[in-house]
Length: 395
Image: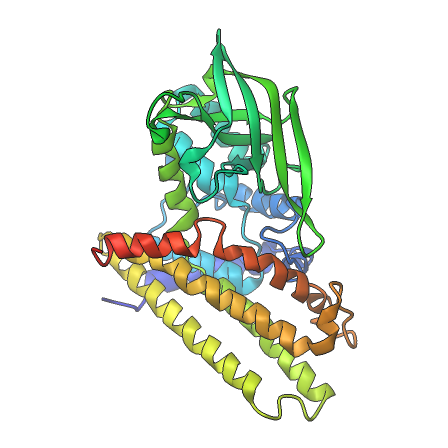
């Protein structure tokens, strides 16, 4: 395998770096650094998405015909790497990276023509309706019911843990269209306007005291059948296809490296303020362990990138990425809280002094609390281990 980059790829990296230097606003960098949520604020994400869309770089994973790029896997990797290094936010993936590929693969020509440009430009802001109170990791047991009524469906039931449902104008949902068959065979994939009568969004306040997730109730909501993606009762197939984009294929080491840089700065500030800080060296040893694990993750990502660039398929190995990066991120969060010491008792931690990292300090505890859920969302770690056991180890 070849971990080196060609002269053309290095030149592309320089072009991206220069673009970011000239076009990434400082207030977006600061908002990203200080965010403690899964996603940055809606307006921050959309502002950055529109800047990238004007350049033609908002959706590198899309095909050129739909507004994407013709970049190679290495160029996509370098673009992501430079964005994280510059402090750019991750674009909200629900529409761009999750729904859009499903529309491209299984949607009608009319759906592609109408929806893809609006997703690309940020005119539509989507949320995901998958989990229900009794259907999380066992998603096939979902009960949100859609009954055909003429050219429409009548939808009743609820979805839960719906990120940014209070901000979204549309939701893509898995709905039950047949109850008299194997559970996976009676599910359809439906697109719903959040302004439709009968939809109620109730906030769920997290341990961090933030309103990020919600429960969405559907009470006799009328949805045109033309809003269904693909065939009726084939939604399970489309959902599995979407989850490939949610769980796999994303390189996270460069994003985590930026979090590690902030942690190092936090520890340096603590040493300056208190000469006796970490006298035992225990925190320094934990930091070294994180750095070693992160280096292993970076090498794994480069190995997968090398395979893909050579025309190969990364296979189940890419499913191990979440098993690597989630514990590393959580370890960074835990260590940051311990560095804060007694100040971590408060959710809104006052920063000592007015240095560059002052605002970041106030996001540490909420970030720690929010990231506990990373072991579950996007496919729990237990599910990921089962995937690796089955497809990589043949167990």
